[in-house]
Length: 602
Image (cartoon, rainbow, N blue to C red; front, side, top):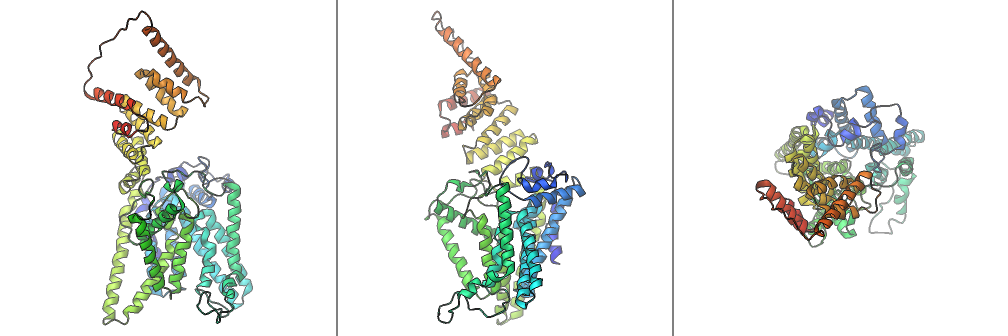
């Protein structure tokens, strides 16, 4: 039943095609289309050969290549594998929860995780395979480590060493799928400290008030490090880090401000924003019915003031979570779940180091396993408390009905929203609609609309992105292309000029120079040419600059000739051309970074 629920909740996504990163990572990736050079996957970047982003996930690419070898260009085969992996993770979570919870509570925890709507992006998107393989490998490695510890406690040392070797291999495989499970090595240590595993001898608690009764408290601290399984998981993490540093380096190479506005934030703003991001992710896990699909600038703004409403809400939520931890302190499953949630979220929280995004729903897939254990422990505590009520059966039936309604809402939302990941057109439209304050979401939606020939709708999306972030250079360039396709050369010239002065580059100059010559703006062209003095210009670019100098010299000679200034009467412009010309003249009077210039374009 758990496997059917874990796969059937997202069944409508099985007929989807390639969308978003799937197009580049899977469909157009030469490393996926052939297995002839599969060893090279372990010595190159995840985005190779297109980009170099500093990500190392060779086993995920190898899984795509194996499936392409079996069924080439068959999208449903990839989606079916994702559904099967989600079902496997749901069952593995139940196996782990049964060691700490009663069957009903463990079943609720596993069903809640398997049907959660926030996991839709991981299951429906093919690149979510990285999260699925990493989570499955991490759970298998943890279960193998638990078996090794139990064998060590029973005295079966050789069996324990075998399970420790299996834990080493599974942990290394999980890390080679995605680096987000790097906190896996610390989970067995927490399980031993929290008395969530059997122990051969009675060890005093680590933290108590009476030090005289616990003179050997240090024995509780060092006990986990006597287990070979703990050292096996730590060794696997060390091997992965060595491989990663040798191939791609420590961290991601490209962190864009639009995707992660914490790039230039102070440490206090970074801490508060990271905590706010964690609370938002937890709330979306509990109530995942209306949540954005993109959190780029400025969908999730940086908290810059501690006395702001969101800054105060962070500390209120932190106090509430501390209260819940205190109320559930006697449940080993709850203690392990809270530590699992916080410890596995820490590497992707932007607290220790910056990652490529400020927030993403897929980042909470592995940490949500800990929240599932917390909810299972809460359900067990609720069932125990209702046994002493006046009508315990009625209360139990009402609580069960509420849980069934919540899970039914999860499944219905999964089935309804699954087709939104069918292709780029539907997905990016949904992303722009659900994230109205994200400049990247509007820009991506405009790019897809432009590819499909909808220039008018694409221009509207590019304008929305520019209004959110006026210095979005790529959006100005894309808007200029839409203007040219709509034969609005005057406005395209303004857009290109603004994009050029945001960052003078020869590539933008190639598009700008012909329009400047055609419009007769010789002085502007010369000024733009002087801005490229540090670049080696192509012959065509030098020819445009020379043509502008020639025209400028001719104009000077005409004025300095006989003192006769032939002035042609200007024709009266009407309609759209007159309005575009007046806006162009007004924009030329403003500076490129002036807000008047931005408003004049619209």
